[in-house]
Image: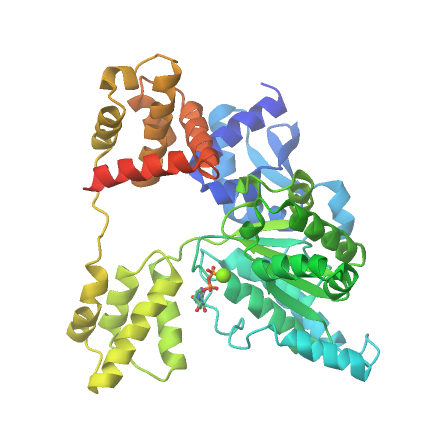
Length: 467
Ligand code: ADP
Ligand code: MG
């Protein structure tokens, strides 16, 4: 096995071990630079990736390499030479790095820039209004699910245009993307009150753009979006299918980037899974830093509601807090909603938030159709009966179109609903390779982005499953 084959095989293994988001972020653009006397040197595209891989994944990578090639004794990392000049190799943990960057720019703040004119001051003030001061880094709780995103936002706020440009943060709804982006903007302003920070949702960006065309004021639009230091565009997934606006964002990006101005974007999914995103926009994004936020673990959830309750000067018993953190797992917005509901009821009834009281208040919310757990065989059976296919055919060797698609849907649902591993899915379907299962899930996911009929079909199957 040569080094490229070795790495390819290792990536295949690693992909099964880490979440998809992490895989795409950390492993996709790496390679083995050389192997000398059992020592494998892995090349990473940026200092950030270097830090992360060598800190968090060194052990897993070594184990995987050794499984494939018993002569491997050690693994080390390096940064691709092009980026060494841009980002010096960082030995310290990225958190220390982020803090340092923030500090050094705090010292510089104000001195470097000439004092702004009244006009600019007014504009800065107007732009600052796009930020909500309630979102800060101080009240953002950091845990394993969001620590990288948080560190990157901090680093960027300390040195806009220098650290990671563009910065792209993605993750499911209610996981704190908007909070982080706004905190970044607020922090830039705190460190340098004359910085021009513009936060917009992608809907606003689209509307402004469309309006500027209708009113023949595109020049003004361009000026507004280019004459700034930090541009933050939230929820760019809504730009999917809006080609003209994407093109405009692309030009805005180029204009800002060429002046070392910072761009920060967020989305509910990774750039590569926004299927109708222009290729050149995707490739620009890939040149920056792409980071995902995941669902918070129990400790982080507990810390978040503790922090939120404290901010409101309200106290809840420890077991009530634990109850809420345990029962609201998917997103922070719902978690916060549950807390607020309990607090409001306490206030209304002039009650203490005991565990019993908390349970009673949240009873109705928790009783909402909770997803029943279904076993994997029922998923396969349901698909078979939905498409009137014998299970043997569904799990068999046939490559007929009318069997392949249902089979892919079955694989997709096993993965999505029951989180079955790809190798196991392969086993369910006549001992197919795990890559076949992976391919099937990817395929259905891609199709679902624009195929409404398929979406309906799958929803219908799910209804049957959980009925
Ligand atoms: P998103 O933009 O990802 O949909 P938001 O940023 O709007 O999510 O977050 C939803 C709510 O949860 C907000 O009120 C936000 O303050 C809160 N929140 C999310 N993550 C955290 C966190 N880590 N610490 C504190 N509050 C959080
Ligand atoms: Mg948001």
